[in-house]
Length: 211
Image (cartoon, rainbow, N blue to C red):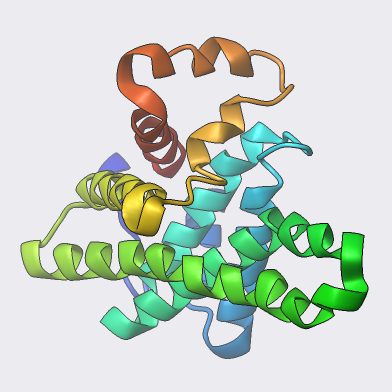
C-alpha cells in the first residue's frame, strides 16, 4: 500500500501492517471496552512517573489513546474519553494524598473518599478539555493526522499550565516529570527544562509520543 495510507485509517479500510490494524481496532471500540481501556491507559501513564519510572510507557500510552479518540463519534464522546483517561491517570498517580490521611484516620476518615476519588475527578476535567478542544479543532479546521497530534500536544500542555496556576495551582504529575526519575538517560532529557521549562518539555514529550 502507498506510504501515505499509513498516516490515516479510514473507517472500513483494509490494513495489513500490525500497527495499522491495532489503530483501526482501537478506533472501533465502543461502550465499556472503550472507556475501560481509556481508564487503564491513564493508569499506565502514571506508571511512567516516579516511583515506578517506566518512562517509555508514554510512547505506548499516547498513540493508543489518540487511536481510541480517532473513533470518537462526537465532541462529547471525545471529552468523556479524555476525562476517563485523566481520571485513571490521577487516581493512580495521586493516591498518596489519601494515604497521608491515615496518619490520623480516626479524625480524617471522612476525607479519604474525597482525596482518593474526588481530587482525580476534578483534575480529570483538564484532560477532558484537552481532548474536547482537539476534537473540535480537528473537525473544524480539517487538521491532518500530524497536525492533530501537534494540536493535542499544545492543548495538553496548555491545560497543564492552567492546572498548575489556577486557584493557586496544583502542578503535580505534569507529564514532563517522566524524565525526572531513574530511567536510564532520563536526566539528560530533563536538562532541556533549563531552556523551555517543564511545560515545554511536557509539550515535546506528548508530541514525540503521539507522532
